[in-house]
Length: 494
Image (cartoon, rainbow, N blue to C red; front, side, top):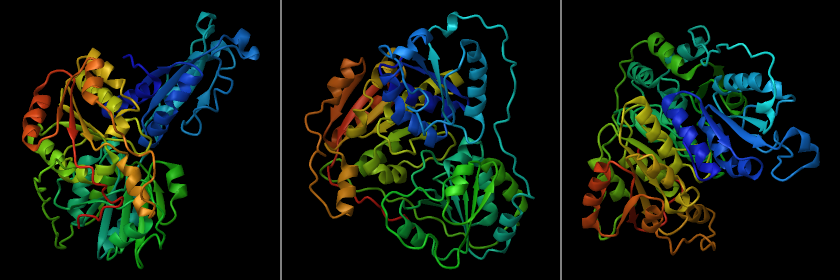
């Protein structure tokens, strides 16, 4: 699968690996080409996507001379966002290095690795092929390791679950639902996760926790036991300090990432498979009879004179197929999107956990390729802001060339609103360089081979979204939305 630039190539492979659960190989151009890809290599790192990233290197005979297109520091360029970086000392070591790269990428926590390959290595003899071996890609989880968590949940008066994307990544979606049903407690999504680990349509689901210390701690007031499964503790954004937890609360952190466990500022960490842990806990804790307070229904937004992001997302959710897949990178309206387009099925929502712009468009291509290869053929709907889309606009070409039936929706607010939101939080409005006038996504899409249309009136929106969903090829809808700057931290739904 050809991409026209290195950054979209990595994002396509990332999303393909996440959707299929299998590692992907992505080959990049040497030197500066690897540099182009580093942002999305960082996203793959935080997304826990098992990628084997390779890049060419100049011939070994000339490396000492630093010729044109040589990578003088192949180990350093992708660091620290790869699990392993290597350039074989000898050409004949390359096959064994590939085997090690594969094993490293899939071992928990999964993530990208990097190999630099001198261009003449393939011409050299290899006297011994490496032995093909098997590595387990799951950590265990059992009642002994989780005994303290089981005891705390059994004795808790007001427990709460915080579920991260690693639960879905490891196949624990249904087990998390069973666990929540046994505990009859609220369930929150961990802040700024790239994929949900629990159905957002479930009556016990409360929404995503705020991504700042003070409001997150305030949200958890009243709970005595907090169990975080498959997510960091916690992924914060603006600095709003206070105690990390409300008074009287005890936190347990279940993760398959030792680094994640080590950097958590509070709590008892248990290194175990997040999905399997949900199953073990669900079987071990007694059935609670506490009253379940269901989340209030999501309010239907008001249809005003202009198209708001809320109304756009409500329209998409009303018209989309029930099994459709959402790929998202519209950061300033992410809270509205997650509220209006809730995810009710596993492997049905993909975004990035890194904050690096330039993921959504090519990620949708990777998911659509996986849907085709897996034979599921679910409709992929990609929602990307007008700022983020420009980082990887070349991905539209790959979608067109492979005749992928993706609906690309660009909410066009004409600004980097996420940065305007941050500026307002810091009481520094009017920062220059955040407006994006003069962009024409219809023309851009047509230039890359996609059909496209622009919508600016409310009465045009339904027909445009219906047309895009029905299209059997890549189709882009640019939607002019209200440009009001939303607050950076949206209050939780309950």
